[in-house]
Length: 617
Image (cartoon, rainbow, N blue to C red):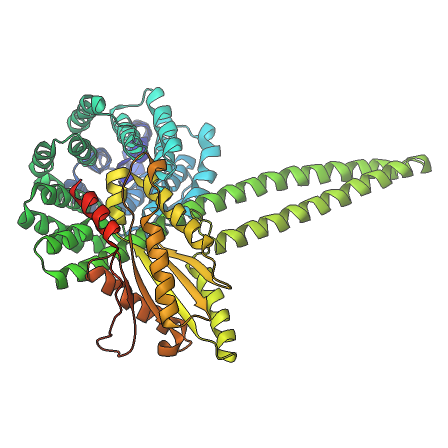
């Protein structure tokens, strides 16, 4: 949700008061002094009041103001510059708006104007997925809260803090900031933003119970009456998802459809993609494939304006894949499944990037704080040293002690710096969830092993596998259950007794094993053993019992050579062959390029029966 419509403009009230006071003062002294026309002041006030509630009219007002730029004076010029940047950002062109705000922060002589531009900059960094810069900018803003004259601007900064922490997955912090806003008795508009951010955090924390739907509906009505229709529609999506979870899918569909024309009138691609992707999923579950396909296609077409992979885009591709699968159009289903998998991996990588950005900035903040303390301590030591130098020889021992403390402090911080470097190296090589090597580390280790085996003329096998219906596990049992499954699979891979094997998580639910000294037949046997182990994973620890299966692709250097990219390509083709042929099986590349042969080991009778029971349940 774009907090472009946040309290960032709430400063308008105090800001316009200043404009009116300035106007009255100038009018009382002299008309010849160049008093701005009241009409221009009124245009600025109107644009401020409707910029998120009526974007079409807002754009018209900004255009009129640009045509009368010569009539604006002082802070009015800054106000128009801010509104121009806001309008550009609202259309989704975040990277074009960011330099304008940076210029405004550098040129304005008004501290509140600079603060306001900085708060919007936090929002745009967040929207353009530059989370580290967003956190750093927020870190520069929050210490200035007590110096800001306009209390609505302080609320604006808290809104941006809540929004940013929701976006990086720190929903508990986002909730705290939202409740802090609500406790400050904000005006109607800021109250609307705080309500949205609170319910968004509750939805993602899975604490939005059905008995809160009435209060959510009340918040939507308040936002609508206050002119914040964009926010109201974001909250309608939250309400629709809550309804669907309570088996009120027809009501959820009717709710979103009844406001579709309004959503499209905003010309705000982020919201349009969110609503259409949600509708597509709800309609598919109801069995209306034609309407579901229409909304999913429109969401995919609009997603290019958003500029990054979102959960909505992932959902739209998933719906298109499921529609083709339901129609038994396997070729189209495979195309959309690949796109869905790519979008899902991109989204998961973005989530990991958000978490890493948060940890990096936290570490930077900690180090800066420690550095300030260290410099303060060193300054105190230097001052003491100067005093000691003016004294007699009897204080020499004290000087030695102080120098020893300084050396010990330097050694301690050198040790801390080394530990920090090692921590980030570990983060760069290890998958945060499972503890095994990530894709980058797996590739580096595999290249080294392949080069060594090539010199020794030793055959190497690559086994790739992907968990079947993993998205369904997440959707049905929750992401916590899915994470536990990934951890169990990683433990299984680490427990395999293959000498010098390289194990890694390639991303999402995809894993790989590089097995030196194995022929194709041995690799197929190892993959089959791994497949059977996966099916025996005990999921009772998640609070649910369900079957976990995986599809495997196998190749060796005897057929593919010692190039890792070639091995990946052939194993990946075999993996998708296993997916295409029914999943939970092993397919091996045995020659040929355009249409490879395969060796398939189907699921055992017991596993097949368990799969059937799982599908029926």
